[in-house]
Image 1 (spheres, rainbow, N blue to C red):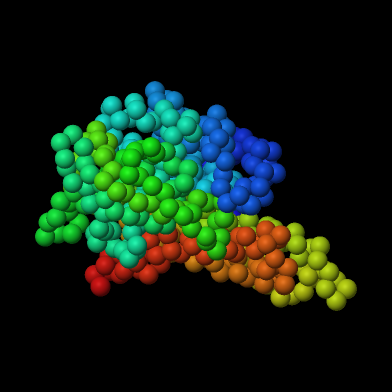
Image 2 (cartoon, rainbow, N blue to C red):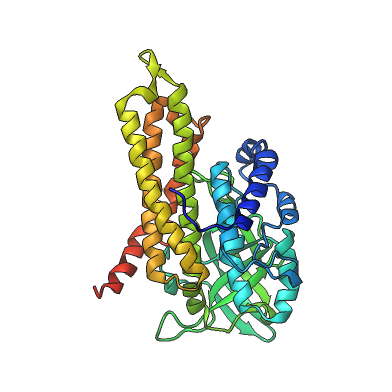
Amino acid sequence: MHGTTYTEEHEHFRGVAREFLTKKVVPRFPEWEEAGLVPREFFLELGELGVPGLQIPEEYGGGGAESFLFNAVWLEETARAQVHFGGLSVHTNVVLPYVMSYANTEQKRRWLPGMAGGALMSAIAMTEPGTGSDLAGMATTARRHGDHYLLNGAKTFITGGVNADLVIVVARTAHTDDRRDGLSLLVVERDMPGFTRGRTLDKIGLKVQDTAELSFDDVEVPVANLLGEEGKAFRYLAGNLPQERLHIAVTAVAAAEAAIATTVDYVKERQVFGKPVAAFQNTKFELAACVAETDAGRAMLDRALLAHDAGELSGVDAAKLKIFCTELQGRVVDRCLQLFGGYGYMREYPIARLYADARVTRIYGGTTEVLKTIIAKSLGL
């Protein structure tokens, strides 16, 4: 089942991306997994390809794409190649929209050229120990002191936290009756005194993704690094959630499709009781069901991509999309792994990595349970 979401221009970019990933990334990826980190200098290679700055205006060294579809093509091809790039996805699909929307002209001139070329990688620090999805309950504070803020607090589960040169930190700058008020976005730069990176967290999957703990001890953040207006962060964060959840859904569907493809290849070759695993009715039925379900997810995703480009993807619809696509990913990858038998549990087989990497998609970007509450509210419940 083929949609009409992508144009010839998008498909040309897909070919470029596929060739780059095949030649430049796939052979090196096992080394990155072993190290648990994408080499910092590799982002400069991606910068030459134009990936970090696809949607950054040309005047700042970016690609100038107004459509999110180029980002989606890159996400799909990355999943197809069964590789990933640490915090790159957060840099391009989560952080950049905040800078593009809320940075002033001076800030854009200061940061965007480096962000487009891969010289300045970025992360966003929201989650704190003990707060989880409750952003309004965060304890990190920033107190105004002359021409700077004194930033104090700690963040955890920060994707790209090791490689990031710029970190957008959500901090409380004022206490009000409404907990959602008084939060601000401050851009912390790599070498600011008092900003330290703790341990890189040891995760079940996504081994190349540098997920870190960050701490801030009287970090002097210039007022010139305030992103947008003071006290408006909660509204800013809510405004970008549809794209954040959309990009997770893109990866989820593409990863499910990759799991099916690698499983089809395996069952055709693997012999059991003197015949290929593919010859058994159960194998055929399981993969047929996976394909049918994934095609449904693809149709929902295509509709959401077009809605997002038109500025019409609501927070509720993005919540529905993320739930459906990430839950689908979990089911499909699990069923595919079962067809590998014991070999599916061995990390030398790609299905094992797909299985481990899939689990977190139902957690980050808004847990399935939190998203269900958003949908329920839209029903008046």
